[in-house]
Length: 348
Image (cartoon, rainbow, N blue to C red; front, side):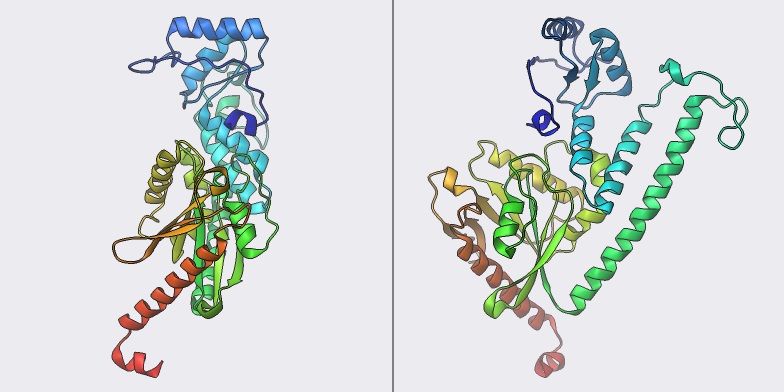
C-alpha cells in the first residue's frame, strides 16, 4: 500500500527471515543475489525495503542490485512530499527529508570527493561533501526557525480558543482509517479524502454546533503508521500539537481491517511519544458498512461512552457520535464547575 501510494507498481515481493540484520546488506548475501536476479529478470527500476536501512547498507545494495534502493523511511517521506499542499506542510516535510538526507552524506560517494574552491560559496580546499553538509545545516536551521514561528502562531490561536471556552476535539488514527471522510461528515466540509495512505497532512479545524452542548472545534490531523519515522514525528510537532492540547480525541479505527487491534496499539504508541496519551479518548469504529456490525454505543465501567460504531461513508451512527461528543462536553463543563472555588461557582 505504501508503494502504490507513492506511485510505484509492485511487481515482485520477496520475503525472508533472519535472526539479525546483516551489517553490510541488511539481508543475507544469498537473499541479496535472489533480489538482484529478480530485478534483472523483470527489468525493475527500484527495490523497496520495508525496513529502515543504514546509509552503508543502502549504498552496498545499490552497488549489488544496480538499481535504486529505497527504504521504508524514504518511502514514507516521499509520500509526505507528494501530499504536502500547505506552506506549513511543505516546510515540515522538507525538514524531515533534510534530516534524513544528512545521514546519507557519506564519503563513499565519489562525486562528493572532488576538492573545489569558490569565492563566497566555499572556502579554499573545501570538498563538495563538506559544502553540502554546511549548506544542508544552514537550510535545516532556517526551516526550524520558520517552524518555531508557526508554532508560536498556533499557540496564539489555541489561547484565543481557550479564552472563548471552546471545547476542542481532534481526530486521530491509523492512516486510511477514514478520518477525513468522518471530518467532512461531521463538519459538512470538503476536505480532501481518498482511499490512500496519508491523504491528509495538514491540520484543518472547523466549528460544529452540537445543540445543548454548544459549539465545539473539530480538527482533522495527519494519520499514523507502524514505524513512523522519528524525523517526521519531530518535524510535524507543530501539527501534532493540536492533538496534545485537545480536550477529547476521537480515535478512528478501520473496523474492516484485520489488523485493527495492532493499529490501535501503534496509534497509542505515537500518542505516547508526542505526549498526548493523557487526553481522553473515544474509540470510533468506522467502516461498519464493510462489516456485519450495526451502529451502536458502548459504555465503560464508569458509565462513560468509550466506543461508537459508525460508517462515515453512509452516515450510519453519526447521530450517536454527536451525542457521545456532546455528553463529553457536558461532563467536562461539570468537572470544571466542580474544580472552581465555591465563591466563583456561585457567581456562575
